[in-house]
Amino acid sequence: LAESRLLNAAMYYRAAEFFVSPNDPDKHALYEKFIDLIFKVYEDLPQLKVKIPYENSYLPGYHFKNQDSKGTVVIFGGYDSLIEEFYKFYSYVRDAGYEVIAFEGPGQGAALKKNKIAMTHEWEKPVKAVLDHFKLKDVTIIGVSLGGYLSLRAAAFEPRISKVVAFGMIYDFFQVLLHAGGPKVREMAEKLLDSNQVELFNKIMQKRMKQDLLVNWGVNHGMYVFGVNTPFEYIEKARLFSTADISKEVKCDVLLLAGTKDHFIPLEMFYKQIEALKNVRSLTARMFTEQEKASSHCQMDNFKLALDVILNWIEQIDKRDKELR
Image 1 (tube, rainbow, N blue to C red):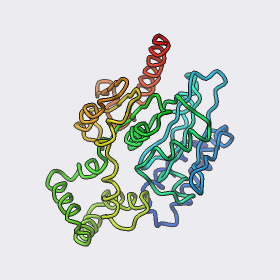
Image 2 (tube, one colour):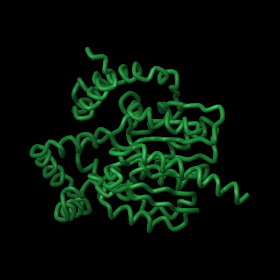
Image 3 (cartoon, rainbow, N blue to C red):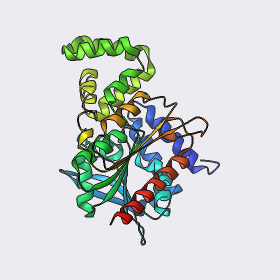
């Protein structure tokens, strides 16, 4: 702050907030400091804020208007991002000629922190609220990280979505969470869950949480996002986040993005998701590599390349549609 590097300072506060326990009173203060600084960095952002009616509350968002819009793109994150982190993402898409609506749904950002709206796997509900509020149809949606699952889920049940980008697609969130533990841990967890051994599962997880700081953070964050109180309830919720049964309902154009060195999502899920999307209008699957410096989770090592791929894909689909009319 003393050096006037406000963006760096904002991201340091964000990093601290990310790892602080949900029960720590400093968490809210760190979040508010991040928001305060990010608004100073991107001075137009506060004027772009919107409130989208949702159930008995609202979803927070930002509306990047474009007078000569080529179409509307709706963007959302996943499991642990904040909407304000991706300002340059939204402005890049807007500058490419699109109207952009970015929002935080249940379990995300201010929707969770301020409005106490817990995560839902039924993502068609918040997307419907957004489309209804702005009176939209024929939209492109982009879901980042866990948003890859959320975007496909919404597309399976919301016919106003014409194009969907799963930016870091997740075929099965439960399997993603267990992947790091290896096959034995996965098998044990599945047996305990299937046999409903609640107390034993919670005891094992609480022991692991004491032994491993990353596990401790992951489980606490998961319980916070899903609005539950035990590891068992958290994992039970996570099991609902699978595209296996709903992929066949996706009928629109789909773009799947993945990286060869994603630390979070097993590569096998990329191929499972491709196989599951049997009824889409078109399917484009793009694998990013180390040689492209874009192989990490959600292409954070070469974000611009991923955005250019997305924008080119949207343009090609729109061009095809014009030729078919």
